[in-house]
Image (cartoon, rainbow, N blue to C red; front, side, top):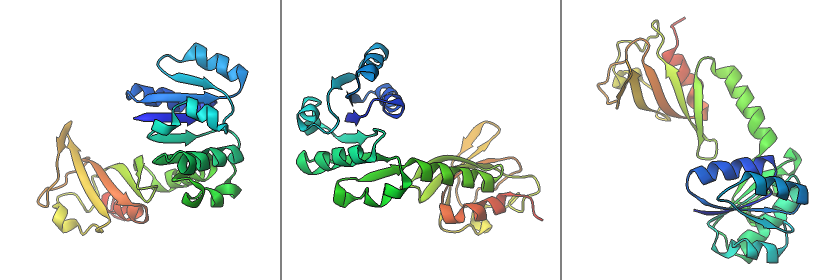
Length: 222
């Protein structure tokens, strides 16, 4: 993919490094001279453009008219919003993602302002901490569908009521889907007649409202 990242600070540079590893074409736009020096010394394979974040001429030089995705991750919300609006409505970029630094500004980062996805760092961190505290030994591997679903990993406790039962008899909520069972280093694609054993590792996709329910199925019976 052809991706433009506006803002070459810690977030932007780290994101660029991740995307380059996946063989994406990445262009970084940065206006601070000190940061430009650091970026030019650090990155190979990333096109670095010097100039104002919200300057249309600079964005054109970065190739925004051919970009598949524009990501605005500067430290100023007003800058990220202007970049998003320009990218979406002036240059017709298909996917625009913007960083929200101040949670109070989250309300304005909407599709009407050119933002397809607004990433509120404080809100994301708070939810992750709260979920980690409530999930116990369950591990959350990935957020899906804008945070509405999660890919999670959990071990079947030896005293769980699920031990010895087939999946069709578990009575799991329809919002929970077991994707894989890892048993003795072997991956099993689960079917309705798959019987769970103690210490099986379960990979499942669940709606966030049903994660605790799934955890209760795999935990020891009280």
